[in-house]
Length: 263
Image 1 (cartoon, helix red, strand yellow):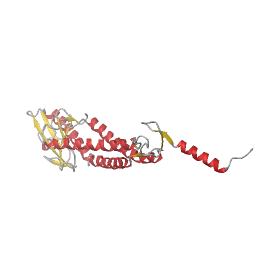
Image 2 (image 1 turned 180 degrees about the horizontal axis):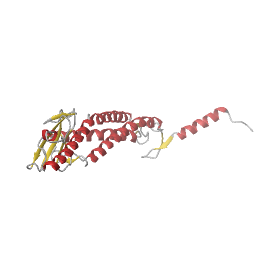
Image 3 (image 1 turned 180 degrees about the vertical axis):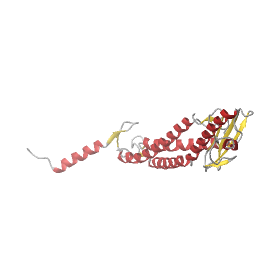
Image 4 (image 1 turned 60 degrees about the horizontal axis):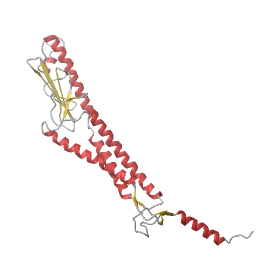
């Protein structure tokens, strides 16, 4: 049997490779090359934008936009009655969503260029992917910085208010009314003191000023814990009374109308 010339075989294989590189135009259905930026027959643009790159940018911008809204709302806290703090579970869920969105933006931003490079058809989106990575990294850092700087101070302040509540309950059981000051709770003249340690009006403990006063002729009381230096020694203001419920606020002193720390 006669053998085909080597040149014919190579020409046949080359033709097969060219046929495999062709695809139909989505508009005119004419065969076109995978590398053509536009159809040579009808002019239809063929360069696609990477969906992964677009998603990376969206996930990068979304947390940043919502964070700006939070900044505006927080700035309104200086106007009494305008801003009401969100419940703690809502804030936790929002921060979790922001973190996940930032991570998604970074991951998709790195995957998108690889998919663009592997695509047989012309594809664009490198700039979107890079923007998504930048926004994702920026958002992650921004969310980390926006967390309370001294959560331990907040925890100690809450513990101090609970200590005051226990001392006041003991004082009322013995005297029939609540104490009007820390001096009354720490007085050991007629027996053991109900509150031990260095306590006085506007005493500072772990970056918080603590106050105490009796109300309703001694039938109730109010105790507060406010940051000595807001946003530095603490972010939240706390309040409690004879109900024993500790309430909190941001940007202004808390009172009986604010949310409980358990909400």
